[in-house]
Image 1 (cartoon, protein in one colour):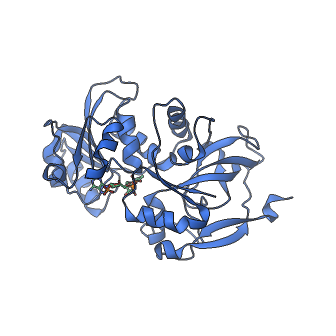
Image 2 (cartoon, helix red, strand yellow):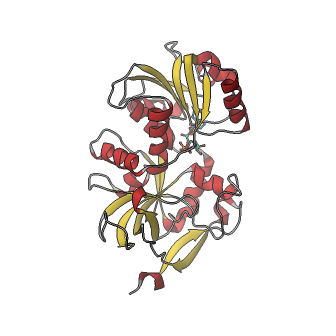
Image 3 (tube, rainbow, N blue to C red):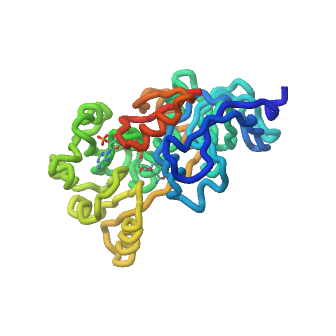
Length: 331
Ligand SMILES: NC(=O)c1ccc[n+]([C@@H]2O[C@H](COP(=O)([O-])OP(=O)(O)OC[C@H]3O[C@@H](n4cnc5c(N)ncnc54)[C@H](OP(=O)(O)O)[C@@H]3O)[C@@H](O)[C@H]2O)c1
């Protein structure tokens, strides 16, 4: 049977706003892969704050470009079909992929991914562990290796790193990846997650609601060479006294004030700087983090799993902002 004539279950929304109640369960045609795309039978998808920020219209008018929109972009699946130009995959291959941010498509039985953003998933990495990786692990990897200059082979000078929101999707990977490098890692999280974050390898952990945590102070008095900042609402005046002479804040959740601080620090030739970060995903880096999971050097921690039929509950859990690790949806 021609796959494009087949219908599949999907979850989509038709307008901005609406939160979990805006998600609708529908039957739609299975997408058709273009020349450089693979069609995947979805085995697991993960939800990122990015997904519901798009629904809220925070990236309007860039995303989504049209309605209805099937959200989420992190998936693991099995190749069901390939476009005519695809060389590296065939039907039956198990993979992890990051979908096109404009088109989304992850909350469905099938989705199409670009071949160059699709990587093999070895049997040691479960579908859920794989689907959790793309946005969160690639963001942590990019922030550490490119923005903070940490070398994950332990070469390079020792750096003091602060990871905020270390119990979240990005943060739990950032702590583990940072510890592959020559680093001392301080992490902030809620009181309930302090043992968990310590178990990821953090050298010291601070409750973000304690006075020292709110002030981002390292218990050992260290100044940070880089802050991987995944929390929100922390002003530059709180970071500034905790940074080393050339310390940098890599802001994963930049707002207007972040861009103003970025510009001001540049214009005044400040040694301490703030850099807003936007993930541009690369297949080679996705392959790298999948291999780290296979080798047991990086682990995915799963907060919760939901069937596709309850995708709105997974959505609500992510919007709630208290996930420990990653939220997974399985068809
Ligand atoms: N710029 C980019 O390209 C990019 C890419 C990926 C992610 N992001 C952004 O990065 C942020 C983090 O993403 P995520 O997937 O890690 O989110 P997440 O999984 O939803 O993060 C939830 C975790 O953050 C913790 N948390 C919240 N506020 C905190 C604070 N002030 N201090 C310490 N911990 C705090 C929560 O702990 P409690 O439950 O104890 O409160 C919870 O465990 C999101 O805003 C996301 O949009 C940006």
